[in-house]
Image (cartoon, rainbow, N blue to C red; front, top):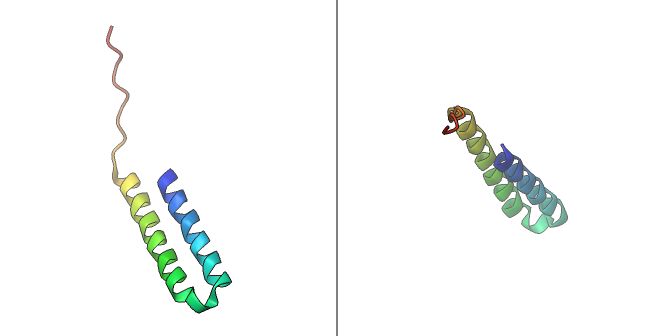
Length: 59
């Protein structure tokens, strides 16, 4: 989940760059979309990964 949040934060930074650099906004918006896709893939991967049960401690 933490990786997905990081990807979304980077996507937000890319959108901010797009607003600051209108001459290159196509590049920044494409990067933002890429990071959003990565965030979604990370979220799906995390949701599909079965949680491991705690192993009993060796006595």
